[in-house]
Each structure stands twice: as structure tokens, then as C-alpha cells.
Amino acid sequence: MHPILFTLGPITIYSYGVAMALAFLIAMTLAAHDARTSLKGLVPLHDATLLDWGAFVMIGGVVGGRLLYVLLNWDSYRTSPLEIFALWHGGLVWYGGLAGGILAQALFAARRHLSFLRITDQVAPVVALGHAIGRLGCFANGCCYGKPTTAWWGVVFPDHLDAVIPTQVIESVGLMILFLVLRMLQGKIGDTNNLQRPGRLFGWYLVGYGLLRAGIESWRGDQPTVWAGMTLAQLISLGLVMTGLLRGHKQIKMGDTNRFLKLFVSPF
Image 1: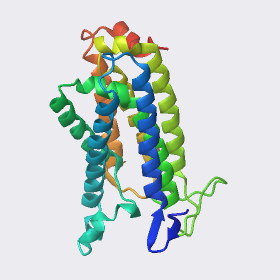
Image 2 (image 1 turned 60 degrees about the vertical axis):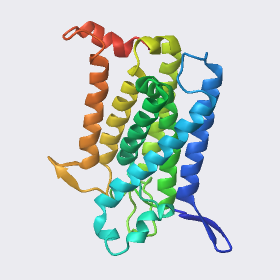
Image 3 (image 1 turned 180 degrees about the horizontal axis):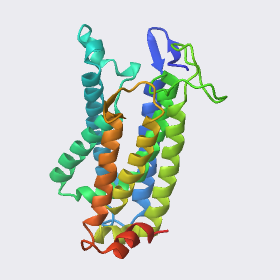
């Protein structure tokens, strides 16, 4: 664990902040490349519009992620309210960031008269990529760790006596796989098809990440259960899976099982 990369006089460079910055820059670079290689009009975000979207969503995501983290850990901030703004120490909840980012994107799409669902289809893969990089920042920071383990691949953090499951790395690998799958599906579906059925790729993202996170949570050692033996993140994950499946179900007739399966399998 290396929460501090180095210091330059009075300036301290934190690994968590560097990972977040790299995640944003790499994701935006790939999104810009995709926008340049797509025909204008087939994807909603291009050039300056993409940069404006990135700024909107980044601010919304950070505010939402931090707000949920503070609410869930209010006892730690009640006596030190200024620590709420110490983002370099870590402390963002992904689902809060997702909610904040979605709200920011909805406002952005409304102001620019763009399709919300088409934007989500365009950026879903790079969101997974950025998240994968960000989770490595969690590993370096020593947060979001797993349960104690005696397995050889357990990791000992300075604040723990026992080795724990490196859930941050496992989730990062899972997100990289999700990114590659979404990229493959994005290429097979094509921009033109997304015009006809917007939200399809975003639905796969919700299903894929929801299942991944629900599984990861069973190994986490820092999250209490809230209902039926499940953590808050697991309950939200199940909601994402259902939302993603319903996104596909809205595009077909009720009860038409063959068409429902074809909707999710045909790109393969």
C-alpha cells in the first residue's frame, strides 16, 4: 500500500488522487478517439461537446460519490467537518458517483438537447475502463479491502494484522473484462443500430457491473449488512441488474421470450 507517492516540499502527491486523474484522462482520451472515428451525427458527443460532458459528469460524480460516503460515515466527520473536503485521502462511494454522474448527464443532455440514452451507449465502455483504473487507486490507498484470508494471494495492509482479500484488484480485473466485452458489443452493434435502439449497451453495462459488484461484496470486509444478509451495495447492484434487464425488455413485446433472448445474445 502506498497512499502517498511522493512529496515536493509542502505538496503531497497521493496515489488515490493520481489514480482518479489517470482514470479520467485515459477514459476521455479513448472517448475522444472514438468520437473522431465515428460519423458525425451517429454519436451525440464530439470535440468540445465531449469535453463539456466530461467536466459536467466528473463534477457530478465526485460530489455524488463524496456525499454518499460522508452520509454513510457521518460519525467520522461530525467532529471534523473540514475533512469532508479532503478528497485526496480517499472516500468516494461508486454508486453515489454513478447517481451524481447520471444526474449531471441528464442536466447536460437537457441543456444541449441531446439523447440521454445515446450518450450512455457512447460512453459505457470508457466508464468501465476508468472505474477499473480507479480501483487500483483504492488498492494503493488501502480502502475497499476484503475479508481476512489465509490464501497465498492475501494482502497485508499496514492498518491490518491479517492478510485480506484484495477485492480492489479483483474488481479492477472484472471491470477490465467488462470494458473489453462492451467494446466488442459496441463494435458489433454499430452507431447506426444505436440510433434505433438507444440504451441497449448501457443496459448491458448495468447488468454486467451489477453482477460483478454483487459478487465482490460477498468478499468485502469493510461493509455491514443492512437487509437479508446483504450490504447496501449488493441491494443497489441487484437494482442495477433489474434496470438493465428491463431496459432490454422495453424494446420487445411482453412475453416474447425468443426476441428477449435474441436482444441480449445476437451481438455475439
